[in-house]
Length: 438
Ligand code: NAD
Image (cartoon, rainbow, N blue to C red; front, top):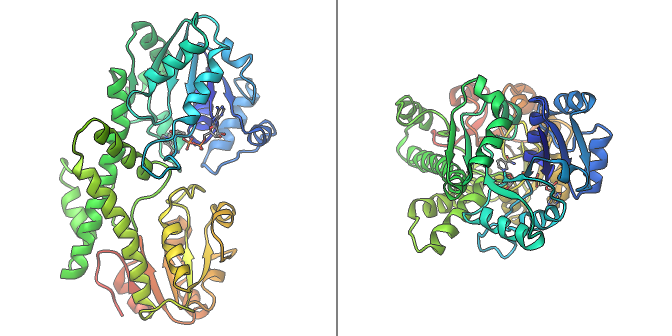
């Protein structure tokens, strides 16, 4: 099938490469001319494991092209995916900013030829598919099209695997014809028995927010339990295991830490709250989840302050990991940004390292010294903070770290290390939801 994808970010680029791998002919369109020029040269603008090989393979096979032009990709496409960003609105009121989705709809409309299915892959508030349909009809009253919703559940860092082996595919449609087209696109997944949830458009739109809000709830839940653990001398990792082995609860997303971040959970929880509010429905659990998450980030800054003796002014703090999670260079809403900003406001000197996110960090963080490896970051530090659990931080040379630091204080916000081992290595060790060893 011929597919066009509008928006070549994390979701659009991964979806485009994977659809091409399925055997479809894919045109990836983006308005960012520099991004497209890089992709045309074979450079991948984001860090996502395995993506470069997949993109190169499918470019060579002639199934994947990149362009800033809507023509001829849009008129030739049987299916058009809208995969543009839907960030939180700049007004700060939690609403999703739909400018990019509306613009994409307006731009594609005049190029439509023959029956086309227009699919929202972006995460969008309930009702957006109908808005897209209205815009397309206004711009091109004669257009023959259906609009569908097909939210994306891939995780950055494991995006290709998630796309190729999803837990499920959700399709929201109100026409048989559109349903058949979408099923045909995803046919390769039938072979691996992927469950399909085929439902109404509004339901499909809500499923994406419900999924992210539920995962965020698990994180805030375990973070609150971690705080209780710290007060009563319990171990949150054992609590998580003790409850997670219950199949009804599940082990995943029960890792205590500095709070959730990234380009999805923060904005999607807020957007769900706005959907509830607009419809006059209480959504108190998600309200609390959001509150607990910002409290957790503030608590982490206090934990670091305490670890350096109650005042971080003039203290050197090494931060290992900036991205919101390992295996991505995405810094959007990363807890590191909030925590580092708080420390800087209180006069701390920050030396940071991240295997992939430093270029972006240098753009958004002022006053931080970026270092080429974790040991350089720890030079002269009064404390080191493990912020993101990259593999390369899981087996640090602790002797070397201790030698280069001014004081051996280790704040492990991801519970990567064992308290007893850190004590044996001579560190004052603070983690999340486990007793400190000093
Ligand atoms: P992104 O910001 O990485 O990429 C969006 C791209 O769209 C940008 O390259 C931008 O230049 C382009 N764009 C915007 N308007 C355009 C237009 N009119 N024409 C052509 N290109 C245009 O965004 P992302 O992280 O890929 O997210 C896209 C959507 O998918 C969001 O709604 C997000 O919530 C959702 N989502 C993201 C993830 C994730 O892990 N990143 C996972 C699931 C769902």
